[in-house]
Image (cartoon, rainbow, N blue to C red; front, side, top):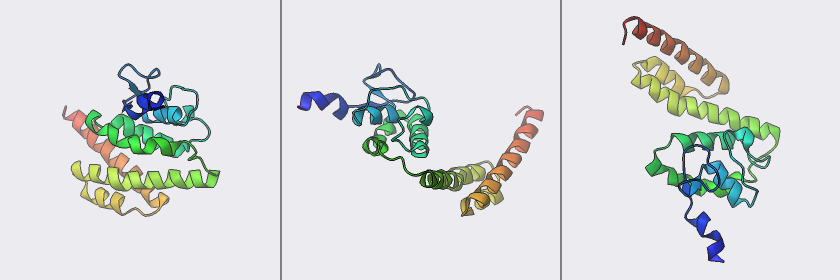
Length: 158
């Protein structure tokens, strides 16, 4: 019986979508979750390609992590492969997940990026955002100020 599962036990998560089982013996996290769930293999290029039993916000987040993580760290996502199938929920739960992921991303990713970009007030505003509306307003402001800095740098040819 172990022979039938050997390929799953030794699975490698790779960035991007892959033909089954991938040229290096693996696939992305969502493709691995499809296989682990016993569903027919399919290429996953976005959360819209996932089976209906997958939560689209969670699948999109997993895909983003999978593709952004360094190769040496990606294996840490394997613990989530078995959690994606069956994660879909009622529309209001999926909407709440989307809001939570957006707010968390603005607080934990955009906030520190604003700090690195020399925008400390925006970094604090992003980090302090508690609601979807506050996070969206902070993100829009960060986009505006970041765009102004980019435009200024291009004029100075930096």
